Length: 479
Ligand code: NAD
Ligand code: UGA
Image (spheres, rainbow, N blue to C red):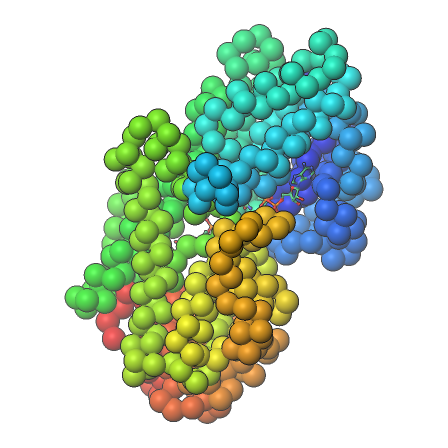
């Protein structure tokens, strides 16, 4: 197969939606259907209010929706009709059974594979878009081939991991550093790699489409996320040392980032990394290493997660110790709840851990985020760790706080000034651009004194704020 004409993607989430929209946008002759079991999500993709906030996404969807881009819940028919089936379902951390708390839960993937096998009457290329443990293609291959009634139907599995980051997804998809395609080194495998490559080559220079074997491609994705997260944990560890010594973590980052072997990107110390993938993918890597007996390798990568947890706790402790060792009964404004700017996604956001830490010490919080609605904030704060991506709570799951406790301790506001009014402190948790240009004189005047700022992202002008009257704590900087 050299020119596929029908693509189906199972999973209309943060990856499936934007990725398929870009393929449809760039390849008007290919019909792209994105399917999902979640009716509400599909309805939103078909509406004016897309289910995810992503700069530039609406324009791309609008340009091709109804032309060659379709969103549907008719998974079976769309899969049956397709030449290429992308699988972009969620692969969260397992919460029960063997490997709970580390291993990837492939139940959604397996469910998709069984469905593909049951409806297929023609051979197809099956593309792993989800992030999966190395060797998943082998297991999925067995599920596919052994559940298909027609022995003439052949499934050729490719690994095509996605490297987009939320908030810059459209830019990343339009101009990717690379596209990675892993396939079997057989005639069918090589043909499938070429067929998928021909889709990307409509807009990605051929030299940026990397070819690899299946296992290298699968493992490259986990490794890329582990390396990216490791850079942040490394800088966060240094931020603690900076605070203890009077060095400035931004100056250190700049100085080391000018070494071309290190490079300047991804060196921002923060309150901790969040997002749906870094933690789960590293835990998955740790689990794989443990499974093959590589304890030291597992421990090495696990320390990246431990440092992230340390950083989030350290931030909470700094807020409490800075405010005379207690925040009980004090109002604290939380600026930003999303895990990074330019997204409404709150999966594994450090804001959850920070809010939990402050609520535990008795604080009353008022949260402002330009993209995250109140219901979501309350739901996130009442959901046990790891369980946000599971439909039902397993027996014995511990709720961090009851819903009524969250209702009592956490209010939200759609206005940053209102969120800060009457507060003793404000904490910047997400680096939204608008936080840098707020009227801090006005905010200072409305706050209890002494008025504290804890900048968990180093996005404010600290000296200016000190001259306004604030007591400012900036991450990894001298007090
Ligand atoms: P998501 O939860 O936003 O979307 C997954 C969708 O799959 C959900 O809407 C769910 O309803 C649907 N689904 C699950 N099982 C299904 C089935 N059997 N049939 C039809 N639909 C089904 O997840 P996401 O953030 O898009 O991530 C998807 C995968 O991509 C994960 O493996 C993730 O690790 C990886 N990834 C994510 C990002 C990111 O930025 N979010 C980036 C790169 C890779
Ligand atoms: C990350 C990777 O960057 C993508 O390449 C990958 O495809 C994706 O995970 C995935 O597999 O899901 P994403 O999580 O969307 O993308 O966003 P990032 O920009 O990587 O940020 C992750 C977290 O690290 C955020 O909380 C961010 O604020 C934090 N971060 C990032 C820092 O604390 N410091 C930095 O220097 C950079």
